[in-house]
Image (cartoon, rainbow, N blue to C red; front, side):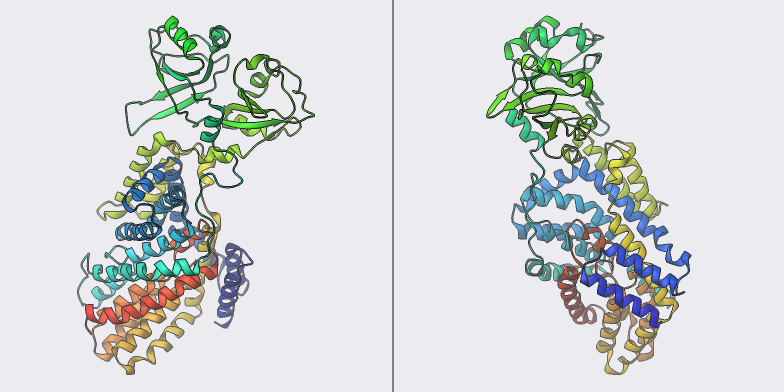
Length: 610
């Protein structure tokens, strides 16, 4: 027991110190417990196969799909419309919406759903996202107190009352308690987050170090000026011909920016868009859409000769094809060479759309332009080919980080599909008559997000997983097993509660509540509720009072644990995104946890008399 408590103490000190990554501290703690013979390897590694950890991994992918398809941005815009751009208004709205969802969906699922939405919301509103993410995590736990199914400790005390022959709780027995928790949370967190959390800079879509955004490049080089969209039908003489055979640039002075295929164009849910570079060997098919840029007169002549009906397009999409700027170096072999002879298209599968030379932007007669050192070339290509340009530092320097820009480009045509997958996951998790476990529902949603194309690739989906949070929770879970095996948790809870029984029911409730609250900082809330429920029940029966307020105290204390990033999965989920340290959880969460406890000592006896 002593060894376990020493390991726990050292881990807590290391977390508070903050100089070592939290996941490494957690791994060192679990390795120490194995070396000390407290845990077997199977017990120590059980956290990595825990349904909660697997569910968290899947939820990162689901949340990534919500973000990647632009669904988060759309919902965030709606929230901004409701609350305006007031930080206080958005703070209250985020907490209320999150708490409402948390009453019916697991707190982990709620945070994964809301996390990308809140990040997008903060970016759109130019607000500091760290002021919203910790309240988001806490609100999901508060919302769990609204219903019987909101959080596992609620079900634990319901089972304890049923086994004791004291009846079963209704679905909304927790509603008054949950409403009080939410009210306290909003009132306390609003000033605390402003006082205790340092400003890290407001969300900014064009943040420093990113270079120019795609839309900035389009605007600066005016490549969207006079862009026309031509749909190729079956009767068109263009169908079946190659781009090279048409020789559109030489004959008409026009540039084909891309060839696009849109499947399910009129179907809101299942749509697919593929973009292809307009290279010489690309064969135009019926149903394709050509995006062509050039002079209006030449566009009209091209349209007339081929019997095409065009429509203006002032916006370009970058799903598969992107843009980047490259600066030619003095030693580059391309300096002094005509652009037509450079082989950019044949060697690198890249189009040069424009050249910036000093303050001049050159878009006409590019083929005959002789390149100079210092020229900035606006190039177009698939994201993969643009990524390859960064590997050639002998001839040019790529400005900005185009591949990071690609990851930020949303697949907005997939947003309805992502929304449908999210709704499916929530339905599977909420309704008990559907025989699907929550972790299964999450894994189904994660796989569907990948298979349905809500990510560019499987690798892109995996990049959304926050492995630091996953390892932190998985490595800390065996700590509860160690505390229970050595008898430390039973000894501490028994001593604290046993000495307070003679001081009256409120003192007993206080002892049970704060003992539960303390234990939940080190072991899971479900394990704490299972441990403390029989102690609360037997203490109530021994002193002749109703066990209901004591058991409710166990449920609330087990769920309202905010002072540690690893006490609940939601706290860990937002840690990386909010750039929080261990001590910031203590500064904000500990006062809230104490105030919540004091309020509950006053409210629970009024709602459920002794």
